Image 1 (cartoon, rainbow, N blue to C red):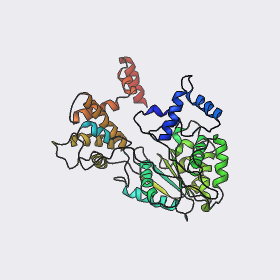
Image 2 (tube, rainbow, N blue to C red):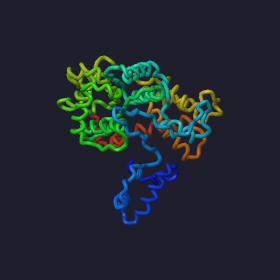
Image 3 (tube, rainbow, N blue to C red):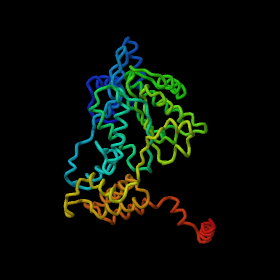
Image 4 (cartoon, rainbow, N blue to C red):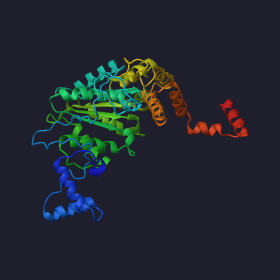
Length: 397
């Protein structure tokens, strides 16, 4: 939000934002654009608009300040800024296929090959955001790239437009914080943004933690239901485990209507890392995402490309090339993102070479390049005597 509005010069802004940007450009000659504008407006006795300096490419959702005794609806879906694609037709070129395989092409509705898991998540979300619901927790586990976070967000996209009552949805990824306590600052900031409007400021993690504990551990019927998605839960684990305990302790007061969906890669994380008092609050709502098989990876990629009905001559990507990438990834990890990364890398190289179709040869080159890490190169470059010592050490181990 603090980026300069000219970051995306082709984006269209509201007239008020354009006027604010013009004023700020006039005062930018002395170096600090925002500070001089603030001083100029202060001298005139006017308040600086909050929208000045905000990126116009992805504007924040404008939430009205709630009146006394009322709470505005918190969670609102942002409008998709991507071009609508007709997936019934095959991509006309490798560049179009490259765009379709991008990670940001998140689907709406139930994910392919994840129908059962999405149904469980949907029922949990409907119960959590219901006005008559209770506080509860859910733990989702599975190896990376199996659609855990994507399934939750797809169900939120499906349910949010049809829910008429207010509710708050907060998503945080614990991997993004160097200090685990900062997760409380992010949760508190997002909650206020959705309930109190735009003019909120961030607090320190310790302060936000105290306020959240005071707020969520008491019953307040005027507060809308709150649903949180805590991704990478294991990153919050500390020696005393007090951070994870505080988060799941919010769900111990049933009438507070604060629910938690936690995601981690470890299947037995609660039993292996968390103590008994946290496991008791986690409950038995658990969903396991199994790794994708090669048939499922092929089916998902075919749905992204939309060329399943195209003939071999019309398709710009050979079916054997997709099958090779799917089988290779399924044999190692079942990570769908790795399969799409292999195909995207192969497509990029084919485009650079000026080729019009993707074959197994380019995919095989991409697979070899992905497996050639710095460690592999280092071992291959060892001298003869170094290699003998290395092989002897491996035999002993």
